[in-house]
Amino acid sequence: MLFTIIILYLLPLLGYIFGNEFICASLLSLLISLNFFVIFVANVINKPAEKMVFNHYKNQAMRKLKSSNHLEVIGITGSYGKTSSKNILNDILSVKYNSLTTPKNFNTQYGLIITINNYLDKFHEIFVAEMGAFKCGRIKLLCDLVKPKYGIITKIGEAHLETFGSKENIQKGKFELVENLPSDGLAILNRDDEWQVNYEIKNDVKVLWIGIDSKDADLVASNIEVTPSGMSFDVYFKDTKEKERFTTKLLGKANIYNILAALAFARFKGMSMNELKMGVKRINTIEHRLELKNTSKDITIIDDAYNSNPVGSKMALDVLKLMDGLKIVVTPGMIELGELQYDLNKKYGEYISEVADFTILVGHKQTEPIQDGLKSKKYDKDKLFIIDDVKEAFKIIDKIKSDKKHNYVLLENDLPDIFNE
Image 1 (spheres, one colour):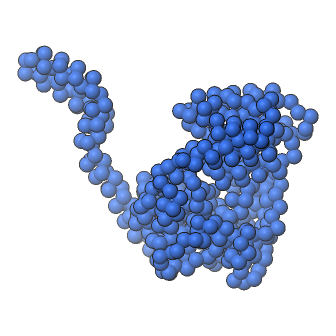
Image 2: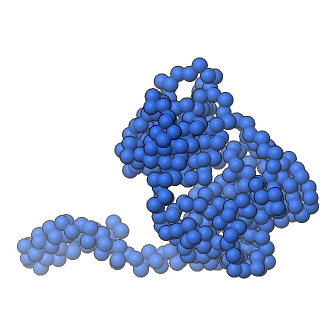
Image 3: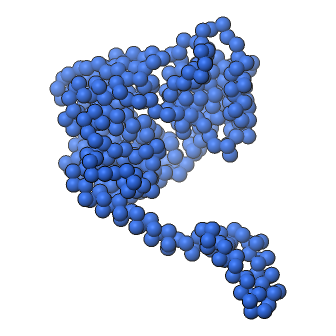
């Protein structure tokens, strides 16, 4: 891009070469004043070349996948929890299999291509591919690229509602994964999610259902116990009528669903109960997703700073509620919720009022719906702080004194600086 723009700016020098300095100066002045037009022209010029480069690496990735005859691909999509679900599944599978997962939040075509070309080798047996989308048709593109045999849908909600246009479109977009699976494949779905239960699947792929509230699912979690150090729960396996207890360092109900989905797939792949228990116990905490951090002897941070959503934010508050100490929430609220953004953030404020001893909101305008939710519940104004930069929150936290034993601070969402006011 830079090279192309430089060439465009050098074109007026042709006027100087041919002896007309006025034309040279005029053209140069015009280009400078129409800088946006120069960038547009550079984009148009570069587009065919960029497309060729993209296709080169895409074809290279597809050839590599095709040559890996023993490799099986499982795709994971959903409005929330994709990265957590992917990491949990990979941790459990790695007890028995040599599995590869997309790093960080690499969930686009580019992310999958980079992962395949740079990290996939001949020894990998299972490739766990996270699949993200912001509109219909995107998941199908990813399926056409990696051709998954198995699929997991985590949860269907309002994330990216603004770009999808409606929740029905989100539902349709996520089920593109299931409808692109082969008939001898497997889909793992959540029976507690009405948007998954109510969808009519348009192929004959085998489906396994997981659930907590729905007792007729194929895998059901019950007797959930939560402590500041993790969770333990029973899992009932419908096919064998076995019930086993599992322990994990993770927190939050959503992670139980993620573990259930991973157990369903790992059991389908032939892993023993002992291997499953070992896998769940060794699951690593996931960065910025209900991650516990002890910053001092008096303060524990519950870091849930990655991409807050209505389901995850409520779950994080439920986790905070369990803690025995002073409870502080720091948040700028949620975004990308379309026309529901005000209502969902107001409801979030109402939830906060039921849990938080102190609330620190980042951004005066951005957090107005949360403020309205707190006011509707008559939240104590002296315990509410509204700041312009998240860095100010830690100064306030240090000043908050309590006769309780410990301070627990929930960091919910971390919007980029452009949202700080």
